[in-house]
Amino acid sequence: MPQAPSPSNDSERLQAITANPVLDGSNDEWTQELVSAASSLTQCPIALVSIVDAERQWFRGCVGLDASGTPREQAFCGYTILADEPLVVEDAAADTRFRDNPLVTGSPGIRFYAGIPIKDDEGFAVGSLCVIDTKPRAISQSKLDGLKS
Image 1: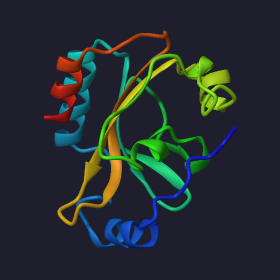
Image 2: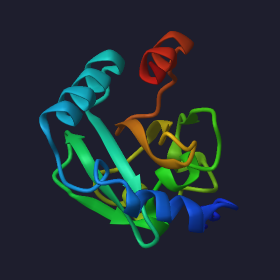
Image 3: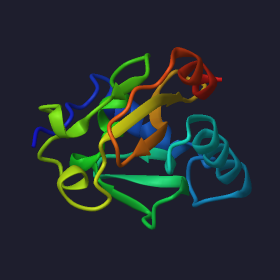
């Protein structure tokens, strides 16, 4: 299973994460409302706000999954933070980046993933808002636009 490469500015990005107290902490009412809205908008059973640090991704908000995070090497969101545009994986079992990922081959059995990079005020991609399904699927541009907004 290939791990996402680190962004070229990863050391600065990681400093931005540790310097921002808003990013520290766990689920709160605002992030729970955000992931609930994302899940509802896309009809995906799982939605997350994840923060990707040096070793792991941890979930700042979570719907549909009983976990607080994953190792970074398993994080789909590790790929999402590499670009300015959404990352959409219609069938993770058919995607060479993810088909051997334990989150695909085991629980929760990820097949579909759509992630929007979350950027701080300095422009560093600190994590993502993502929606996940256990079935392969597509997503419309209007739903991606809804997630972006």
